[in-house]
Length: 498
Image 1 (cartoon, rainbow, N blue to C red):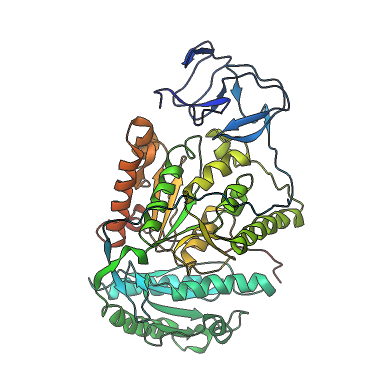
Image 2 (cartoon, rainbow, N blue to C red):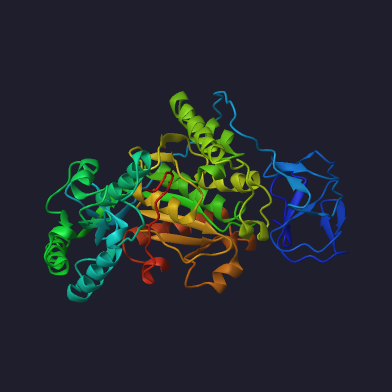
């Protein structure tokens, strides 16, 4: 890598800047000297070949769009002269490529976890209050606050509630989406015990919600309907005291790393996301999978333009068909709401150097590494197979992290070039794509991938990330979202409200 720019792939006709360039400055690229036509900021692209109107602009070795005008060597390449190549739904043919299968590790690794009564493992020993409807968010908040004051103890990790807006005035699949996410939280092994809090008159009332939950351990899950209680705070605290006592019966013990499930997410991307943090996460994903573990990739709109890479890695034709449906169904969702499928990235993405959805997608899918795709899940699905799983969900940070957590991920790794304080219900590792962000936001960022452009080797940083995740899963360290109490959920909404 050069000190001031990166040529990501030898076939690319643009480079990515690592410093602020001024008009008239010169860049030496192999035997070529490029003179800057204008100022270009960090993380943005500069043409190193003449690109005619209509010709593709290549980054990562793939087209990220086409030129809308002739682009001279040394010109800034961005939204003013580039347009996406994406269209609506497409037809695909099964043509498997050779996915990289990592060799089995010579050393079996373990981490310290809580083994639950059903055999699942958790990395935290928390009490969760899951409310069936948004009307009782504040009741849940008051119960959690009071319980944490009354039951402070080293035997559990605290009582947490997760406010949301839904559970009433919803119909059909929209209501079922809410129920699936909340049900999956009830089953999540990071929670030693659960208090399900209902109001009583909502669509998702407790009796109906129990049908979605299915089997549960009565020692671990308690229910309370607020409308039926004379004093919901007193009764709720009594139930929470029982759950705290139950949680304190669990102790950490060594379990194989193959039990670990990690969600993969990016947000607030910049021009380095696909160069540093996302490839690093992909390298970590391959290493965890080689140890028998599981990773989960979502954000379907951010697969648009790079979906064939994932399709080529499908373990069989059934998984391939699942990926096709995953992509085209989400495109149909856009079309149903009269939105263009190829809508450009967010303003923050653009400011950071991301020009088209293809560019963002080609960077985004690198979080999945090179391992085969073993399964495809609907929104609200739960991971059941070791390896890389794709999960239906939007790109929205809060919604997708919630979906990853609900799928059973013990941890979510969240790469970002712009930064965000948000954290989901599970430990949410904020990984910076660049060192200045890591230095500026020490209370947000947990791991810095920017070291890759400062000379650190990918294998070395992968090993460091792997060891950090083991420490995190074992409870030896905490993420900033945990330290700051930033634990939230958001549920996908697609339907009318009565």
